[in-house]
Image (tube, rainbow, N blue to C red; front, side):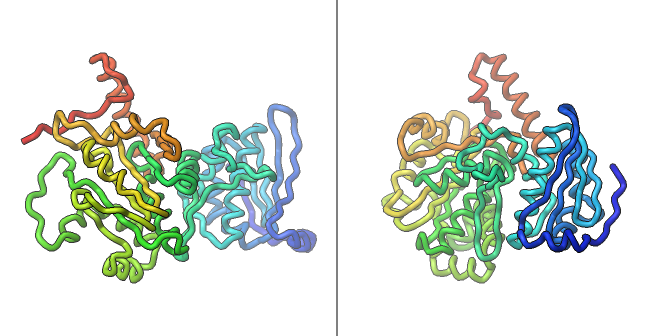
Length: 374
């Protein structure tokens, strides 16, 4: 990594801040490699952008194979033309995030790299603005703003916004549940809906929890903890508690939803791969006026007893061509937890494909063995 020295911007650079968020860039070099200079108008934000001890720039060097030297509010990027352009777009995206008052976490840097690394054709329009600056889909509440960290997350947020019924499927750690709850919280804050309804099949992951004490909420809480965690991250704790007490945020066990019409609400079904076909049909037909329904699940982690078909798989097959329904598929490339999680998912997927090939099954239907029914 090139050495870097921090210094104050010159008076000429300070005068250039009249453009606000505008950046100054110059490039020179041949077709194989180039050197690009960027000037960020706000010295304070530039320091936040580069990170403590230039850790953001170091990560960009490592991931994109470029050399970056910084001085004050300027950076010089050296490397291949494509890598330099990707680095420039990543820094611009992160700088825009700082301009609107958001902080930059290490995961945001990784997400920005992923977003600018995908070709324009792969992005869901209108992700690319006329200015050629990436406009990443985001979800905002008074407490927090969340931006898509992968192109599929971007597509998922946009699908929830334009469709009344959205399916999100894929492996663990891709952000399906968190983004769905965040989207529901944002609609509730904007008064676009009157309540949030959370549901999840009460199926243990291959083990028996036995009798659980307390009232209905106490009994289903262990199964809904990931949903609560996302709610508390997007909304103030006191507002979440008041919402739960007043049923503005409702915990609705799947088995108790029969006969209801869910209007003016965001209805979220998590771990939907553990629904039976009858449960899934019952749930989907609860959709009422001015409501949105979001169904998430991972078809590779079905915990139903052996011989029981997953209602999620059946629904995805039956509703494939129904207008107004969107299905967004996440892959191991969308895992945003620890990078090891992505490697673990890929290893299990590869093993599943090999097993399916030996048995002559469709690799897309590969799932681990379901627990035997006791």
